Image: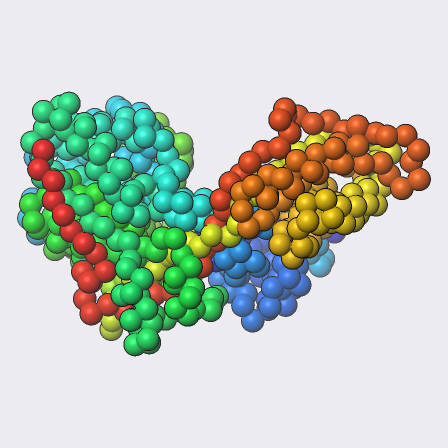
Length: 104
Length: 459
């Protein structure tokens, strides 16, 4: 049985950070879960880049051990367009992370 | 009145994350007993998209703002402390400040309050910005948007985001109430504590913590928060008695809507919370120490601009027929191919003069190409057809033309004419003018006041 990020995390959420950035927060219940995800490499910039179709060089990742939280930020896709923006507040953009499988 | 006599101490009452959002009146009475030196509230945001700036229209209703502002003005009068409202009218345009000022004067008149009200305008003169651009004093932020004089001219409204300095100047001019145009959320909360001589590290960190009201508490829906700054740090607690601030809720709030959880740029410098320590004082109050603020070499004001992006009209239809849902990709391709050929023909409209987009709610409307699971046929789908054109009449015309085809488009090979579920009559929904954010830059003024205009109203 594989475990997904969505199953392991206490909460995964997304929000815009200003009009031009999306930020994702992953909260974990235990230090062990938090470290397991960090070590697994599933949140590496190239993985995030391919999952969200952004250049890996633009992905910024922050580890916050005291909060057992990992934060990922990257620029919004259609910068400044406004017309075809599907999710103004980027509130649902964490969903592709939920199904990411963790190596055993 | 204040419990915070002496330099370096200051209490800030934040009633709600956004004026017009509503809060229980008793939370303000409770906050008043904690001894605030200022009531500070944000009234704006860019989160809801470019429309409010582009059209210079508030997102909140006048009635709700009036209700909230009336309660805060009564509390201010009782306490004899200043009231600061930032980013008036959602986008902080001059219209927004004037709109808030009219509400404020009306309330002052009704309550017989004798007030000096400061208005700080933050809308930018295009000639000024173009001059700064030529001087290479308009600088891009990441991700970089292109800029030239034509782009500045294309914006309907441009605001400069002020720091605490213009607000502090208005207070020093004797204002009881400051109605600010576009300001950083934190500047609204920081102006009075900085005037009181509180150190900038705790002040800016406290300001960031409280600017969204109760979002830094265990119950984000319940009213506001109170922060007390001192020379070594700050304390924060919710106004609602049933809610609490915990080290986790306060620390986690630094993540919210921030791309970087440790460093936050302000016009005058950068807040650094990397070494901040969060400790509980009791079950509902937290103390924070170790916050730093690095003064910048030059003051920079972010500029926000919105430019017209055409006009839109929508159609919506519900699909429940399992046969169509099982072949939904085929159906959407058929419909769009048909419409893209029919519209130019019937309306004598070149293909490049309009855009047509179809979103299937229930399939992938929310995530688009990022949707991970498209293999299972949905149970029901809401289809939104979006027509964008250069003028209102054309957008509406396209939607009207699409109406019968969206209603009746059969699958390839289907011999009967299906009808889908239209939820409304008329089926066309006019969206009117739409906008895009056209700038992601900072301007470098000579001083923190250059990009603002001050005026005073006596009631």
